[in-house]
Length: 194
View (cartoon, rainbow, N blue to C red):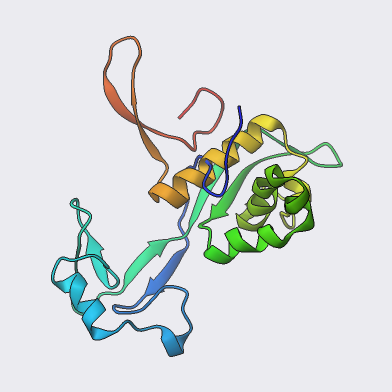
């Protein structure tokens, strides 16, 4: 089954890394350009599109942040691979964490010669950039990702998609036997678990 990235993966909740985002600030922007124009910030207060400095409600529209409150954003999600990466010593590494992708994470691999020669390599390079830890490995890079089992690569692609498109690791499913709807955590600990 062919997977597509940017935008593929399955996630498990972790102790989130919190990034402080002050009201009116653009996350990740340098301090010199970190504030939005007053008109744009006012859109969030008026219930319009935007939401920087506000809280997104069930409707998806932003509400103003409480005075003196600093909003936080979960930027890292833990996962457990179905099989696990086996290193040169034979040790198996299953638990890890992936951070949210940035525009740069998705653009830089497009300049990589390996990706130009084989576009399917994009997911390997991209995942190597956003996986922050895996087991006891000192660092994770595309060389680690390209040596993972196919089932683990597919899992990470789905995980990537879930956290970057949805912002969480829950998925709504329907039981094929009883037709009951429920949510599962896609970052489950082992095959068949959630």
